[in-house]
Image 1 (cartoon, rainbow, N blue to C red):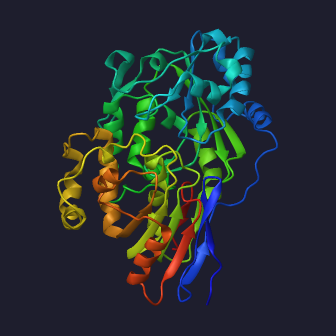
Image 2: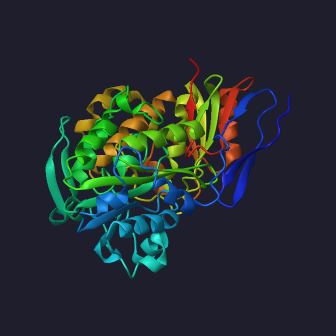
Image 3: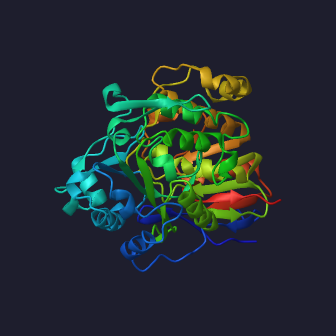
Length: 438
């Protein structure tokens, strides 16, 4: 049978590809089309009066002298500027002036944000009224040690955050490869944590049963439970304002309140949108990075989110827009001493040793990505179309095969499955994850 051309988002344009007539297209699967609210500003103001598991923000603000507002950075699609005014109004209602507020982007190990980027993020009219600070995970004098979690993670957090009476975290709840879902305490760890904290916390999921936790139950996620334990060591009160977005990046719902109880309510909405049941695993899986298109580090979420839908030995084709190129991606910093074929043979031996490996040019936090990459390459043939990524980076990432165009990728898949293949397509793989049958 013939198939209609398949369209994949590509910036303001799209990519199209045509499947062989003999292949069985099981589905083009995307998020549930829940409509956005009429006004994100009004939704935020309303939800700040419908707090989950916590006193209201205004009530918490009454005893606060110094308030820190942690916002997620430009790698997240949260429309911070539309949520920020209602948060500031609620703080003012509690007696906190803008001059008492310090805004800190949750950078983790991402690149620093410039003043103009922060202004765009929160709204330019606020930049002259609030203070702001750039987090640095590698600056000892700007970190405070709070203790060690029961799983052995040393908790170093931004000193300004650690000294605040009240911390308000503004972000979004979306599927996340390591943490099950974003949002909640995750804006604090890893968002404003030290590199040693981030490294140990990420490494907790370097295990066959937890290396792919996207959309999975939080109570079975060591990394998420650990970061929540670590963030609760803060002396200041923590209040979250988290948005859930649809695939058009419109606000569907805002949750506010306790960083665990409110977060859990938001994850239920996110799961309804982005968790997609599949009829069966696919021989050929096609996925696109949209809307996580900032850089390669962010774009590979499309592969990570959906790889559970690939049959062992199948072919996966991932398109990554990567508008800013590679980004902060330690895995691409140096060439590994072996090529793809040898690496595949060695992968079963290397996997148990990854948490203890020391590789020059690769940060501790990248051990998780190495572990995931080794597990993923054992699953099948991974093809990447990412034209903004330089050739020298191709050689440093032997876990995948870069292709010059989509037709080349399809030709490789057709060589593997010349007659029949069961196919699944995820056009918005940057935020969608499969729910397997049974």
